Image (cartoon, rainbow, N blue to C red; front, side, top):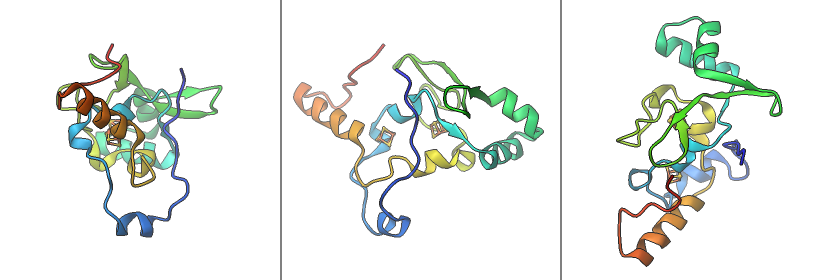
Length: 139
Ligand code: SF4
Ligand code: SF4
């Protein structure tokens, strides 16, 4: 299924900052970094170009691809041992972003609310399995 990593909707940044989030990315295998369409804007490509000391065009070609049906550029993926594929910037072992300071805007905003649906599902399944490392939907 093709899924975009959606842009921020709803709550204001001020409101979001004033309340603690109810998820813990350090305990998650980075499901949100596996979305098929992780949007990159012109500004995001410029930031990546600076990070890799490449031209805008070279960065766009190397790290993004244009999705005709979406009408936008998204980050390229690579195979992943937990999920089918994941963003190429995800460290496959540590499950951390390797370009954190230069990540796209959509990654900065996600999950846009205090709660992360995947984390809640993960937490529930781990409680059910009595296994704090359990990861559903592997493969
Ligand atoms: S899926 Fe949710 S908990 Fe997991 S890394 Fe993304 S935002 Fe964090
Ligand atoms: S750029 Fe970083 S935060 Fe964004 S999807 Fe890729 S690994 Fe995840």
